Length: 140
Image (cartoon, rainbow, N blue to C red; front, side, top):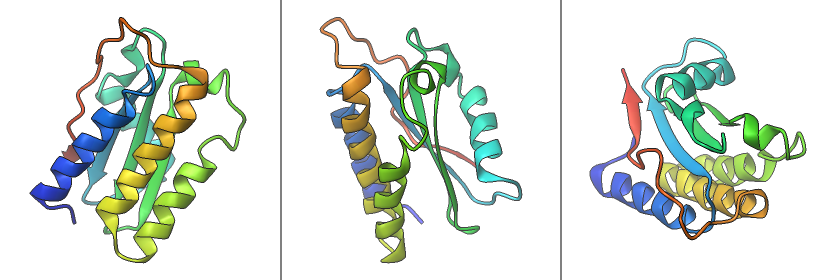
């Protein structure tokens, strides 16, 4: 569903969003999700080592296009600070674009919103290091 040009735009959006926050944002796209998308996102989160950031402030945007499933999850450092509906606006922006078959735009909108939301709790720090890859991960 995502071509190389769109892939590059998504990676660029992650880089730009992370200039606002010390949080780490990743995107994972599965071809198929036969289980609950939140449970699958938690498994992917752990596989990618996203729980190993210093401030525990990683965010995973998980998508399975063929099954029309998505999840946005954050690490313990985020959940300890934010309200329960914290990712609602991020998810809603994504879904609005997906409904118009603009999948890359939906992911980019979610990344941008996540960066803005994270900035409140995890502002960018001068000595910030990129702790996680900005590349999209995939699994068959």
